[in-house]
Length: 340
Picture 1 (cartoon, rainbow, N blue to C red):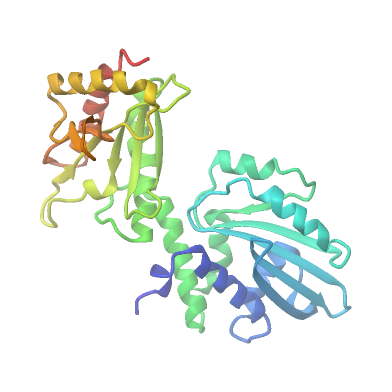
Picture 2: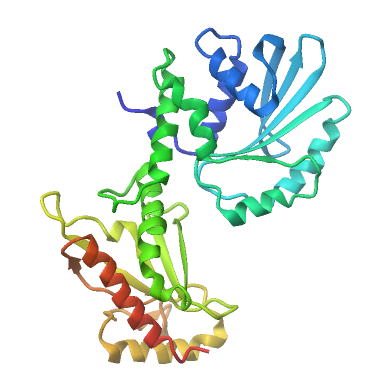
């Protein structure tokens, strides 16, 4: 049977699962898993609980769990839930709302829950919230042991979520070039591969370039961008998309590869430089330039976001794939040497 969480990958689906699990704390098939979460997040045993109710999007917080204990004392658990998006400075605002609960709820717990890696910059933002009662961070590394034991659970939904968590964990540890692109697990594998395997092999460019890897928002691919260092503004960059790096076919090790030369979001004052760069790219000959200069809305000399790209390139194996990236970073830096 296919896993429902391979399809229900958005944060709303994970919100629903966590609320469902916690509100079913007294169900014989679920109480052990609910107890694990409550013990871990709040130090509360399900045996001491009188009732649990949860709310979605109370004051925009993903999950709010209202707990009444058998001695009639109350606790509140707040969970900010992420799949692969990052925290974007909303926690201080949430804390301002949570303070209003302190009179009624003597015990307040705050969890940042993310089924992905929490990177250092994100962790720093979370740690530097103003409230003394800090948000405790649970990345996929900490979430995995909470659920892995339930892969054999009798309840299908719990079992499938446990399998999903373990699959996500292994995807975030991937070091092999992925064979596919298109699912949530594939995207995590590509991010991990670019970060753990490709970028470390570009060490000769670490002081010359900035590297960034992410899922492309709503678009169905992961990309790695390569940008010349030393600027405090947007500059032309290279971009490699996972969907452009798939095997030619299942029988061979050959890989497709496209490396795009892009000018997204360029400031208007750099249009002259961009024009000069486009001429250099044409003369250089390493990047294809078809369609670089166009007419748009009746205006001539519209300069597109993509100003160069590889054209129908394949490489024989993974080693050649990384060597091709190195080669084109060299061309890029040479073309960008006069950029101001």
